[in-house]
Amino acid sequence: MTQDKKDHDLQIDDLVLSASEREADESAIFSAVNNKLDASPRSWFRLPSIGANTAVAGFAVMMLAAGFVGYNLPDIAIGSTEDGLLLLAMGEPSLIDGFPSVLTGIDQ
Amino acid sequence: MPDREQHQAAALISEIARGDRRALGLLITDHGRRLTMVATRFLGREDEAEEVVQDVFVRVWRHAGSYDPAKAKVSTWLYRIAVNLCIDRQRKRALLRLVGLDDTSTEVPDAQPTAADRIYGAQRLAKVRAAMDNLPSRQRMALLLCAVAELGNSEIADAMGISVGAVEQLLVRARRSLRQISDQDEDMMT
Image 1: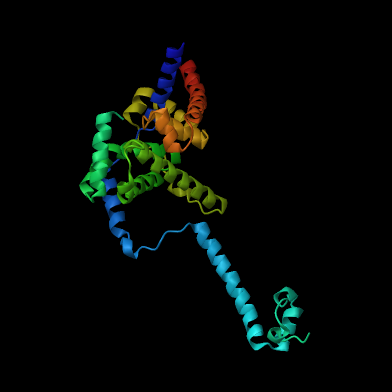
Image 2: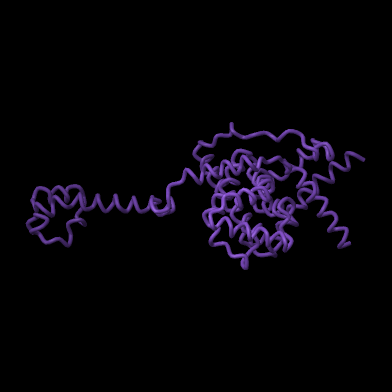
């Protein structure tokens, strides 16, 4: 029975092989591979490869950081009461908390 | 892969690592067709399969220096690369389909009738192809690596990154599904 089962498996595998038959032009594959290799930049010039997810996440963090700094920097640097009040008005007291009043421009 | 073939293939990899493009051509001659068959039947698209096979050999060229014959046979290593690239393609296609950008117009219908079609009957093989397309991806890949690439179960396990037991289960299920199609056709013919 074991041998019959194995023969049956071989019959299926043979069908699969037949169903998968297709011609392949090895010289065309070789030519295409050579073109790809010749088109790729030289290794010393190649940027390190990073995953797409990492790149997107990194970019998002950068934008958030830039936004945070850019959003607060004028107020911190100038220390104007007006800007500090603007922050409060926009409901962002957390951005002001912790900063000395001289920096936020808000009179405590 | 018999030991002599593995020895010759490993020697080719060494030459490729030294920058011998001719050796790469020989490797493509030895393995290109079977890789193309596996990729085509797995992905269902000839154009994508051809891209995958090209990328396999691009990676071979770039990483030939890191190939260790003690860890895997050349054929196993090639098919491990092919499996990963095929899965990547499949995921990318699923994502494109999700956002409505998958271009199904480039799908190529089944190739011209082959000698196998004449032996088994084109209609029967078309049913087998359709049945294979409906198999879960892992079953389809395991079956293709067994039947087309002629890898052993341990090599399939290595190529797919799963256990040998898992490979055996995948093959049992895949063959069972195809056997139903095959038995139905035989009943009709008798």
